[in-house]
Length: 344
Image (cartoon, rainbow, N blue to C red; front, top):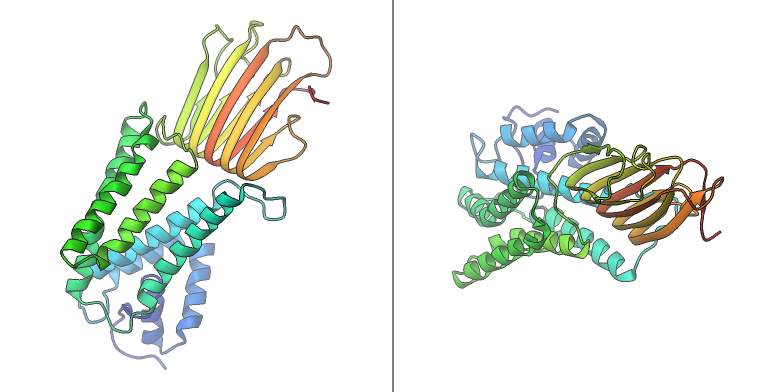
């Protein structure tokens, strides 16, 4: 049976934004079934999450005739949920392969994900009454200090790439904490707890993963010419970095390359006739280095130090010293011809 009332989002007992609950009420269907269908659509249909966000903005909350403050809350919850999923999946981890790392990293990382999921999904699911317009407005305004800091930080990382912005990240947590303390003095701390804890968790992740947020945002392709004695430095705060070093040793000179990515990947192509000394580290992710490691290294705090030389040839080949760092993501080193590890 289909009801004839206008479509409205649920603002009580909802998991994310209440769209599934509203559709279930409109069709007089099982909300669990609708959630499963919408969840599969969001995961499998291209831009499904964007469509869900648009529906959140377009469909008013129950008890309202037009979208309002609660729509902003719904979109923010969707954005946070997908941001957490992206951070969780960053690094190309393969479940079927060994997944190593320090126990502290495991506990902190998994604990952060579980606590965040519980806080996000249970916050409104336990609510048995719709959020009033005044309550929704209070929640949105409480999130503004953290959101403003995040927006300014993101713009700074993008527009001023030469500064190591990860050193400024803890300031976001300090602003969030100060907002929470100020709200507590006025007896309105409840609305500030979520944004403040999220800001502190993100700042903690940046510090713990030792992300180097320098070099701007976006993908970058670097193809240096023959080495001239100066070190080659390439960095990205967020994005993929592709280093094509196949021309680097044509002049027969040694070379030093330093590359870092905060969130993303580094892909290196080595020249065929050169020796290589590699120092590669990822905080969370994997290292796939052709002829330099017995297998792909993945997990938390993975560190590879190795050197190799061409199978045929003497010690006269030029040396490439490669230093790579990734916070969340992958390092892939390929090429180099027929290399043999020096420790074999």
